[in-house]
Length: 321
Ligand code: SF4
Ligand code: MG
Image 1 (cartoon, rainbow, N blue to C red):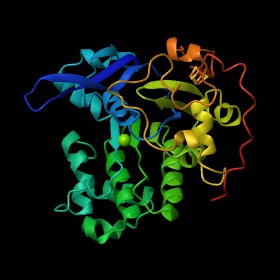
Image 2: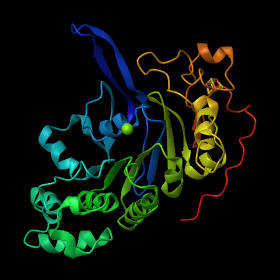
Image 3: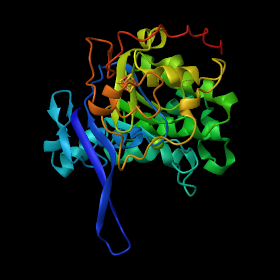
């Protein structure tokens, strides 16, 4: 993705334009085949909009999108539908993503029928998919309401896998689940991604989850990427003050820093210069005037003072599962 922009116009009661929510405001990113890229940030930073833009479920105002060299924005509606089979979205809400009037078998077989996959042996394929996600094939004839949240999300994953995708985007795929089952579902997803050689973009506000599975991380703030790099490097040596604040807020890492309390500034009128300056403990007058660009080679951050910040406190080891 290059230079993606998507603003949502706001109108008053009389329908007059009153500005726009600058949900995604110039985002460029890439993901390698077989990689887990996490897009992180607080809610309202634009990451869900970005996920939908990447799949062209919503249209960007500007910017370009290529998937394996193919220009997604140039595809016709029917070519795009074919393409989408290879690009699946898993939603946060395992309750909303399954039709309550369809048995598990019907829900998972639907994409098989739609795309003419495994003709004549759909039932076996559904059984295979269920065991892949750790569910007994006998459960196929049951209804979604008979399952727990974690099981429903497993079913949603099986359904996403049914169309044999190359790329999966998970938008907070475990955030609605009990903390006790989050790790199981994340580990399941990560295992499947590696085993099947899939590419995964994990959208999450939860750095604990991200740390378990991501190869690379992009941190978003108010519609822009402010830091991007290999997960290892980013967790060990966060270069942007916002990333540091997010990491300090991970449970077990201490207190939530005061700057992350309260709401992030409005994406209708983002702060001038560096968008983080209203919350940044290192902000200088210059930061209000001049917007920093992402700078660096493989580990990039958008902060004027990234090379002169005091060292970040070391992170504790991730909790064992
Ligand atoms: Fe903070 Fe300035 Fe860096 Fe922005 S550019 S993150 S305000 S130090
Ligand atoms: Mg969201």
